[in-house]
Amino acid sequence: MVSARPLARSFFARDPRQVARSLLGKVLVRGAGTRLRVGRIVEVEAYLGAADAAAHAAAGETTRNAVLFGPPGHAYVYLSYGLHYCLNVSCMPSGDAGCVLFRALEPVAGIKQMARSREIELAAADVRDPQILRRLASGPARLCQALEITRPRDNGGDMTAPKSGLWIGDDGFRAENIVTALRVGITKSAELPLRYYLAGNEFVSRR
Image (cartoon, rainbow, N blue to C red; front, top):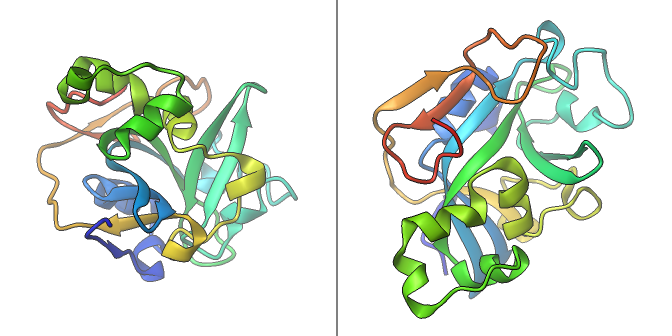
């Protein structure tokens, strides 16, 4: 079992920039009981809604992006370039769009299961090798593969509730030395410094 308490919905009912920084160091949990996959959140990006040209909500509410408009604390999963799923959590009070994209996790538990989902063979010694483990969940697509996150399965799920099977918790870890940088892989609003990560962490996707 993971020793963490779920984050309250009020945690997410804030500006995505505040939520993004506060999420660093928290844990993302897949599963229930003893069959858990857990990763510490070490890199995220904030998306601001209508005022952010790179955000899916910039053009207004649609069937596809409805999760972004509330309530907060729910999973928004989309397919990137028709190939890879990416996970976000909705922010802001209902009616206002915003979200945080998960970019990288530091594997904590369920490492062998993550490796199987990523089709990576791990030797016994590999579970202690950061250079090998960073291949599991360093990057938005990789972490979704490692935790078997898909739009049909998880979009709209309540990330404040463990019974949903995909939730975010606080295990007491306190993040320090947070770096603010430009977002990655976008062309619109690319000048906004809305990527946040833990300085010196080996599992960040890009420094």
